[in-house]
Amino acid sequence: MAGQPVRGIRFASLGSGSRGNCLVVQAGRTRVMVDCGFSVAETERRLARLGLAPEDIDAVLITHEHSDHVGSAAAFSRRHRRQVWLTAGTYDALRDTDFHALRIIHAHEPLALGDLAIDPYPVPHDAREPCQFVLSDGDRRLGLLTDAGSVTPHMRRVLDGCHALLLECNHDVQMLATGPYPESLKRRVGGDYGHLANTQAEALLAEMDTSRLTHLVAMHLSEKNNTEALALEALSRALGCTPQWLDVARQEEGFGWRDA
Image (cartoon, rainbow, N blue to C red):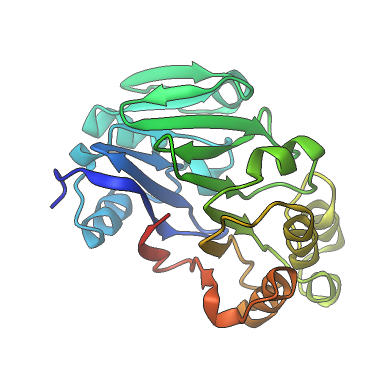
């Protein structure tokens, strides 16, 4: 199954949240992982859950240097001889840069890898040079947006018209304000370079062209400052749909294969 090409574009999550993030995207015979925030052994275990081995991955794209996104990227690259793609700022911020192979990317320059077209774009986050990605087979477009504290007009334009969207709903504003985090961390998470709140995700959707959207997944939910019900309520309000139409990426199981 792993060696079979697919029509269109498909995607699955190994897990999403503050304890680790990793997404797999495939078009044709080309597969990439976006981020590698679990240990190598745990990444291997979660890939196997999708019917994949590390050798089935063509490259690893990194969004930024925070440990829940880049934790074992270098070790995974060395062990399985995979190339890692990341911005120069992200590379400079890493402690472990001993990659098997490396490609420096620019957040405003489109990329191509086999059957996948990849459009990085910059986001406001408290990292050195963070970016997110839109991935496509040339027809269907999958947008990924997590780890951003605010939304810029450029981000909205990049994500317009996507067929599938993986969108951060990190926290509920009230839960964050009254929750257990120290005040400094509350300011960081809720600031312009922190993480998107449910209301910010809702506002972005209300301004976007969502006419082609067939999948919307709530991503990177805080385990202390949000609930699935609150996130889905906000997203469903923006789209005028029922919460049952939406998906959630969970920390432990992520989600299985979806077709854009």
